[in-house]
Amino acid sequence: MITYLDGTLAESLPGRCAIDVGGVGYEVLVPLSTSDGMPAPGAKVRILTHLHVREQEQTLYGFRTGDERDLFRLLIDRVSGIGPKLALAVLSGMGVADFKSAVVGADVAALSKISGLGKKTAERIVLELKDKVGVAAAWEAASGDAASGSAGAVNDAVLALIALGYKQAEAHKAVQKLAKEGEGEADADELIRRALRAMS
Image 1 (cartoon, rainbow, N blue to C red):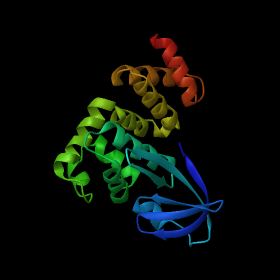
Image 2: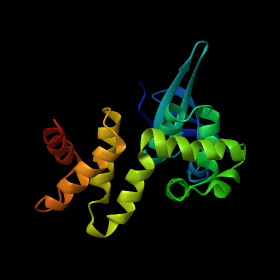
Image 3: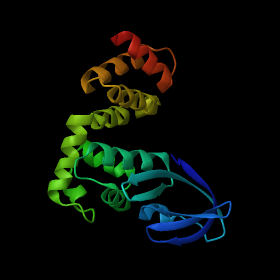
Image 4: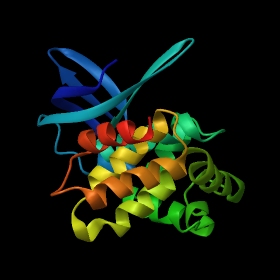
């Protein structure tokens, strides 16, 4: 798995770029937000990547931030009917924070405005991310905890427990309880370990 590229920007076009890494040129498909923020060709760049492998094709997708890549992977892994191209269109049409707010608020109208995303697909995104994965609850919890500074750790811990197979409600309840009881700010790893002990 190629997780990032560190090299020289050889070419940058809307939605794609070429990066020279040690004399090898990698073509990377990127959201418009990433290509818009690229420096001039010849500059040194680091881009986070996701390698998508199909039967007769291997495609590299690139992102400026870990949040963008995480959302891309979430969409292609957890929402039926969304492939890499449509996930890239979502990231091109809406920032990560705005997307999270739209899912938490079930704002189908805002999601439907993204090019290539119809109302039915927008409804499916909201439904599947809310009910099947539980990420919306974690995002909501994170925004509610922002004042305490523990938002990131709580959010990451809840999502990790959901990925391990725990139900959204019990993961959220366990992590919130531990976050409130803890002395000081625990990091995500510590919250996960304590939650696993508490729920076992």
